[in-house]
Image 1 (cartoon, one colour):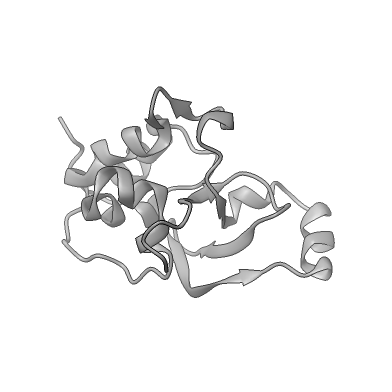
Image 2 (cartoon, one colour; image 1 turned 60 degrees about the vertical axis):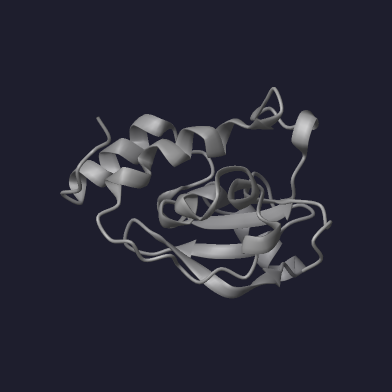
Amino acid sequence: MKKNSPPLCPAFSGIKKSNLLGILQHDKIALLPNPLELDQDFIENLKNGSLPEQHFRFVSRCGTGECIQWKGQRCGVAAEVVNFVKSVKNDDIPDCSIRSDCRWYRQEGVSICKVCPYVLTDMKASELAIIFSNRGEDLLK
């Protein structure tokens, strides 16, 4: 990826103009080796069920100031998510094909990558806290 390339949102809401980044498996997003372009059949199948963001993570260009999550000069989601880094017991950093272009990574550094697989797009911070609590992980005090 180019150093000056536009940042990517790793929790893009919506399937239009996005690629599939990961799939929910056992309370955790399994990141794909590379984002997959969505074909029309996949998109049509998603329209027939629950909200796609409850089962999948999508990636697309970061909307910066046009995004409702944008707070001042930064992504408000990343600013909240990074508070859960100490809740993750292991220090494993998942493989990620978008890391160098990821808005969260560029804003918060590699530590946010430990929490990233636990985040669903439409999730509130309180829901993330419940996931870590159910896993027996210590919550950030």
